[in-house]
Amino acid sequence: MAREEVRELVDQGMQVFAQPARPAARSGRLTVFRRILSHWSADHRTLKHCLLRLKNPHVFINQGGSFDILAEPHRLSFLQNPEVTYDLFFRSNQHQATMPKHRRERAANLFARAHRCLLNSAWTKELTETQLLSRLSNAAIFPHYIRFSYDTPLPWPKTESNAPIALASISRMDAHHKGLDVLLEALALLPPERPSWRFDFYGDGPDRAYLEELADWLGLGSKVRFMPHTNDIHSIWRRHHLLVLTSRYEGLAVSMLEAMACGRPVRRTPYGGFREWVIPGETGFNCPAAEPTLIAQSLIAAMANRNKWSAMGLAAFNRVRDKLPRDPWSLYLTPFAAPQR
Image 1 (tube, rainbow, N blue to C red):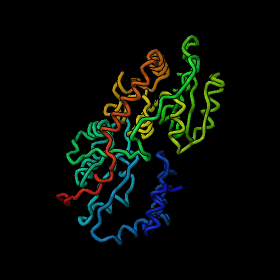
Image 2 (spheres, helix red, strand yellow):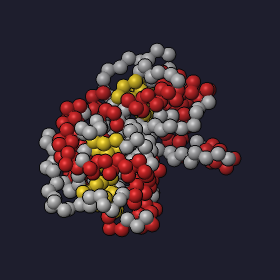
Image 3 (tube, rainbow, N blue to C red):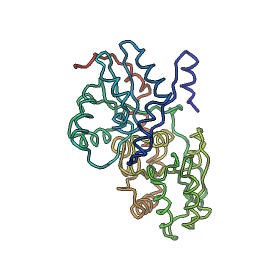
Image 4 (cartoon, rainbow, N blue to C red):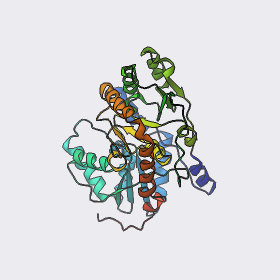
């Protein structure tokens, strides 16, 4: 279902075309054949014809990963038109196998010809440049937009002295990307003498059923609950104390900014926008990697300092309030000159 903002634009006359599905990134003759057929699909033809009708266009290309555009031959061909200018969004990246030199050069040339390369964190930019062995001189950092007012933080949850610590994860139920499998393994490693805690997972996704079975397999019982996706972020943070993020890779986690805007500290792995937002011991806690033992150790250390969480949550709120632009769309609308060809 499209977001409300997209539906409003459609009501104003914007045309929306379905994104053609891409075959899974596998090798083999059958996969290659499917990929060739997909480029002759009705969706691809519709998109291609729509692009060709545009006169002197400026195009915003939204990539999930830094190099997704390299797998889109129709779009690559369109971008070679000297009358076309474009901005490239880089929403995420991860450590991966070394790219062949010809692929690196192709990507570097494509990125250099862009008006701007828009990345959501310094980490994403630095990793992309290292993978390319080339600097992104036209890079700009774009912030995410928080879809609720955050002029004041939420009150700290009122709990009895013997009430359990309330921890939460808010993410798509993608076990590998979000590290939810190793998070459950880490929870199972927490020693019983530690303070009482409960953990709520919010979200939906392809691995939800597996993760629920994994929690049972690990014997976590009623200490872990799987809750449905909700857009009412305030309802979550009125009842919870700490956001836990264990992604194996990330761009800039919206759930992190939302939790901080509600006045809650964050414990997360050091990818994406970690350095810009989470100051260890001040606005949150660091876990060096998405590995069960390290996650468990970082949670134990965080819970040992739980008397500081309220003050850390206030510091997190102040950081978001002072540093996150309220009008991030202004970056996309700044005047631009066509790049040199």
